[in-house]
Image 1 (cartoon, rainbow, N blue to C red):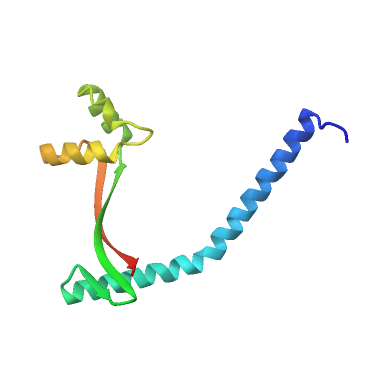
Image 2 (image 1 turned 90 degrees about the horizontal axis):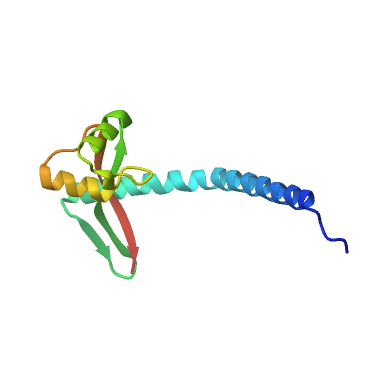
Length: 130
C-alpha cells in the first residue's frame, strides 16, 4: 500500500473536518426542539418555586428542583474597559475575555463595576436526580 503524500493527508483532513462541521450542524438542529422544551420546563419550574415562595422542592424517589443564582460578565465597551485597565494597571481583568471572578471580587470590594463591563445576575432552576 502506498504511503500517502502530504497533499493526500491534508485533503483527507479537510474532508473529515467538513464532515464534522456538517454533523455538528445536524446535531444542533436535532437538539433544538429538545433544548426548547427543556427551557420551557425550567421556566415553569422556576415559576412554581417562585409562586410557592421557596428555593427548592424535593420529591421522594424523583429528584429536587432548586434555584441557583448565576452571573455573567460581558464587556459592553472595550475601549472604556481597556482604558480603565491600563490606567489602573489592572491586567488581571484580562483573559481573552474579562475575568468574571476578578470582576466579581472588584465589584464586591468597591461597590462599582469597571467602565464598559456589564454584570448580569439571573436566577435559574436546576434539577438533581434522587
